[in-house]
Length: 123
Image (cartoon, rainbow, N blue to C red; front, top):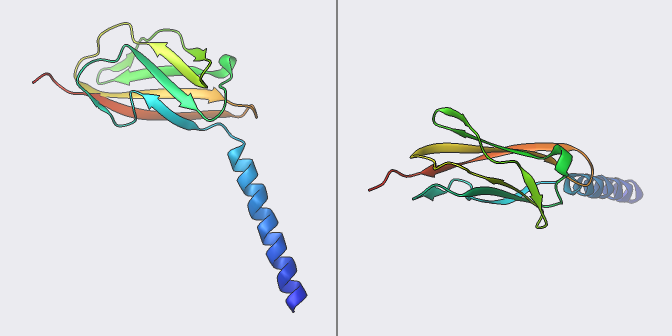
């Protein structure tokens, strides 16, 4: 019985390690400016999203949605800091905004996500 339990333990441990390596191979959101769930006093000049791997330029995109729908932002570029950047060419008014991102990392798998921030009304 002891050998069977040892083999089961080793097999379970190996499966857990393989799963951990596979999961860590995908690119993931790291941080952003504006920060996720930030409450800002004024409109940001740009959006920047950092990842755990270098984003693939051909597959990378940032978009912005506001209280009245989609907002035109500048072209998405890849910075040297493992991030995507896009200018916000117009001043955003008070309200809730959602940044949507799409990119791929070293493994080529496309990842998507979003985060929200708010611009507070002037006091």
